[in-house]
Length: 293
Image (cartoon, rainbow, N blue to C red; front, side, top):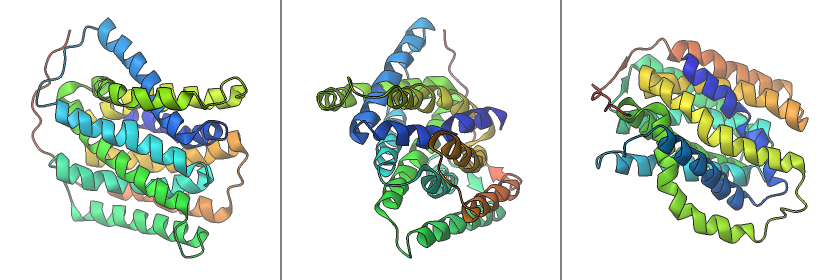
């Protein structure tokens, strides 16, 4: 839980940093370029530590992980940050732990108890009501983009957490970045020709570097490490705290006004962690981790 919490704190600044970056950079370029920079750093780490290549059975899972957290979540959250406040998107992103449980149930063989589902559903209902209230009874385009980001994140978290048991926490995100790098290199390069690199502010560059280094790489070292130990379903509920951290970062970095209703919703969602994390979760038997050099 402590490992996952460190990752969640880092992820908490992702949406505000993304909003800062997309104010000047194209969201598609941001999603692709952050993955390329993180992949380069991951490649150095893999080579320096002499890691073995994944097995044939692990490559499909790494592809799914990359689809979810290297492409899906970064791309759709970047699009959402063009039109939505980071504080509002953070509440919609509160659905991610529940979506991760669903993905873990399908992919990792984990079976949470009924009380776990009730707590997760209650938190999701609170988040959905909040989004509809702010949208005047309908979901705004930014909400739809964030829901797509949630779906991608859930897939990548569940699959990556499953792989981390045998492949290792940081090795999982590193190899997932390597899988995606050749595919994203060409669109990243093509979009680079239309980016305002010379006129971009240091603030925008700082946002890009944060989401590339911390959101796309270092945060996952702790996140997948925690999942490998505690299980995907249970540990994913720690991410409900990300809502609270993102609200703080949105106020600090973006000077966004967070009203009382938003804080109330955040408090209700976070309070459900205590219920969800006490519920028993049956886990599939993990295969022993393969030794590395």
